[in-house]
Image (cartoon, rainbow, N blue to C red):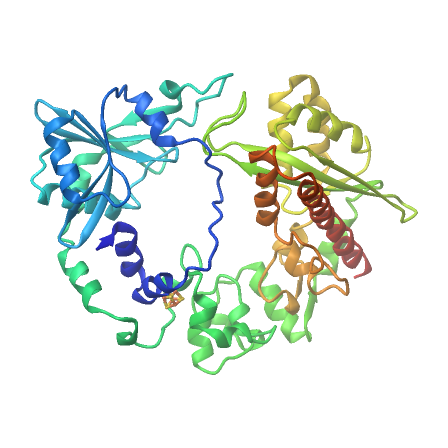
Length: 488
Ligand code: SF4
């Protein structure tokens, strides 16, 4: 028996589907935190009183029997052919059954239609006459008060949203038009084995919207590629073809076939120069804006689908830590770290305004997409602090800019522009000795503290110590990278 997620993986790539079947080692950490049972909240929104509740392992007949006895079915399992689906909500009306899909996001678009059409295919083939189709999704405008209010937390719509996030495309006709017979796919899935597959061939399914997690497994030779390999060329649609033609290095790139971004230019020049490219004039111009004392600032935060605290909206973030290293003109460094366990945004914002010097430049890596946004949110939340907070933003410079703008490129960056990849080429032990090496690891560890007040004190202290070291490390890395740029 297959599930819709199997069909989705097999359709993207059969090898991906089989790899996933074998792989039970990958620990899944959701990017967004989801503590509350969303379907329980949605039940309240829909005003459902009595209902049939399906569960894992239910015989398909159970849901069919429930159709006779109940007005509402929640998470009922239906099967047809070799496909088994979980249906979020079915409601009996005079004209047939209304179907409700639950979308744990803010704007349901039409980019995952197969999920919905496959469900519809199973229901229709079970002889269930679907009247209307709705989507119940999170309300991006909802601001949480003391208690969660399911009535305002969700929106029920009969339309998909367009690119401008307006509900314009009616769900039912869209799905009926896109619906196709799933049987050929199921048959192919049943009759294919891993051994039947041709050796992996790289396609945009491997590196498209998100890089496939089995990429290194399928193409192990790329792991060992040289720093100046043509495959490190950023956003190049022709790099694989050029490699096949024997153009192995960045310096061999066919100028007529590259997109021509400043980053690509810097990469090719770096290889022609023996590994490093610096636009000295542009770098000097950027550095001349930086004033002492320089405050290197890094935030850590958690994102929640359902707002857990007053004043938060769906998918808002909760900053829980910042690390600040202040570099003075005489070269001395001063370190300040703030960490809270639950919601202490007010305290954090107040401390930030006290810890950051009132003059000088504030530097963050990816400032525009992260630290500036967090401070702007604080300023909106605490108007009495907003003047001080916004003055921090006015003095903020993004350390990522000299790299993203193609001012500096070192082939040891291997086509990556993260702080960690830049730090990895510095003569510095970097992050390797830390228990918390990645930002998301830091978030998962913090969850241990936030979820459970009963975490053993010793474990708690260790997590806090690691989090402080990790967050402090990003700020420290910025001082190393800044000094490196200055030396150049
Ligand atoms: S890397 Fe490509 S070929 Fe390999 S499993 Fe993923 S999608 Fe399939």
